[in-house]
Length: 212
Image (cartoon, rainbow, N blue to C red; front, side, top):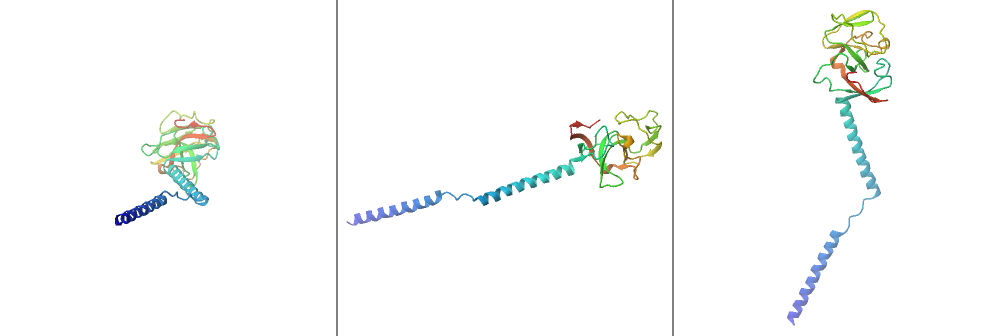
């Protein structure tokens, strides 16, 4: 009789343990409640904000350290670039090399550095730029400078310019309608004011400007 009682108690104990284990298992397997619509909307908004902030930071980095994205405001560089053209200048062009004659560059306007200008380098540091009979002569050369890229023959007063070291003499390709070094109060552009070399225009058409 005692053995039967002991066996019954063991069976009851085992049943109790099994029930407890099943309850724990049921709790573990109970599905988590789904996010509410509000929580989903907040999560999606946070994701969009992160994406936008990352894009803005990347754009700031690119335009501050790698390129100049500029729009041409006037016709002073016709017919190389036209009014309204959009172009990219490479800020890294002159990190490891010097500007060259005929490079098209974007720079801070010497008379008002809040404005950006785009012109072609004509006079190099130390050059004597002589304008005579509507032609340009560099130093003691008897041959006029190449002007095959200009819009039309230049008509301008004779003048002589002594380009200081570390500075450049700029002219527009539309020389009869260009505000450039010939007319500025601060005639020359310092190298550290050159922001980059124009490499291509992308609007309204795509065209490479390097060596143009």
